Image (cartoon, rainbow, N blue to C red; front, side, top):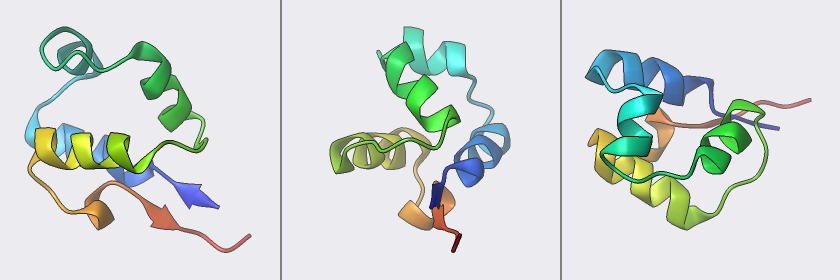
Length: 66
């Protein structure tokens, strides 16, 4: 399973809220919901978050063996 728990921690570290993602960076609320539910998202979405947060992929997601 892919977990996006690290994304929320990185957002806190960077001082970026979900509201900021939606209003300033035009991230779809649906994408945020998918990430909250640890559902699949495109590599484009991961790339976008890396650019917004100025971070690496491993700062956003991790693989957890089920």
